[in-house]
Image (cartoon, rainbow, N blue to C red; front, side):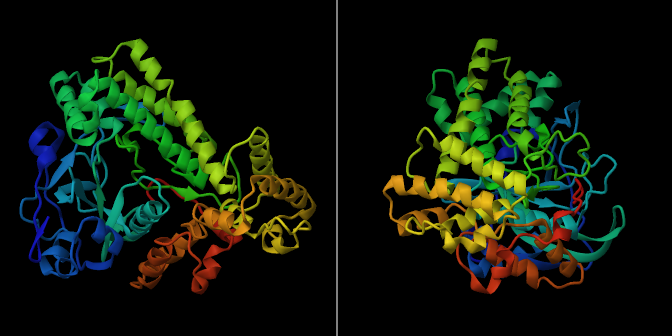
Length: 489
């Protein structure tokens, strides 16, 4: 909440679960300044323009002043990293400021890149402009696409040197979520055999994050089932929107089923189901088409931590909800993307044939779906689809599929105008392509944040026609498809 031009926080999570975190002190970046603030995130938090312009608020964003009621805390957790259990991880670059209540929802605010914590391991607790621009833009872009996600409130930059593969400039993101609790929190207390703490953690999740579970016959079972189903829904949305996370370790899996920890992520350019966006992932464990199975693998790791409360039969039954839930939601999303008002027997084949065509010809995933809005039922020759057909090297194969598609659309009985309007509301025209983020990073490293601001504005309206930015709707240039993205990105 805010009062006058001041931010008032509390620290409910860490007061109720004091064992979850350690006290820390940020180390503000030298010569730092605010580069950009998300107006959408300000609205989410119900922060007024007056408050956002205040010195206290600006100093909070740069880790220079703690708001009233806040506390700097870094949380401990564990996790399976690339399938191997690591008994202690934690907030190595992040620290909580406190919690802010907006309406009926409570949000936690975190600094990312504000210095060392007890869990920094061999790191320096810093973030660089490269990774921070990507995280800032990604959180806000995903929210506008309707994909559950953590958010980004602000991006601060500095000229302080930070040492990675090369010397880079330090930056700081203030990120926001209803909770940053992860699968790894449960794993830490379970494997440490800290049963009392694990019980309190689950009780907190039931009371504050999943309050509907309190009325269930078995609240712990209801909690686990909700996590299973939210995770399935999240990954269905990732797959339908062509989003690759890149590092689905269990410590990067949200208890709320939100996208968390943007590192080597990427939206698909050419449709390659086996696309690996993380150049450190040499085995392809987290390839785009592996995300559904890895989601289940991670849920199995979480399930072990519920064995104090649930039987193996209860856990198995809950986990069995994952695949049908994911498939159901994925097919619903694909039905909408194809502009169909119902799912008929042959529609699955129509969808698979379309995806096979995209893969075979390496067509751009998002642009191809968006330009299905060119198909007109009356245009039997598909002459009005030239922009769509230009995405394919061999137009004859695309025309064959379009003929089947046009006939199926005719069967729906929908008017073109209504269908196209609906499709344009689910097939994004603008996505955060890696090359776009890279161009914004390069300019930000020179102290120019105009492109970051333009992309933020653009990606806040991903489904809308924006003629001034038409070039960003085109497939990525060849060099942009070959960018190597690492966990430190």
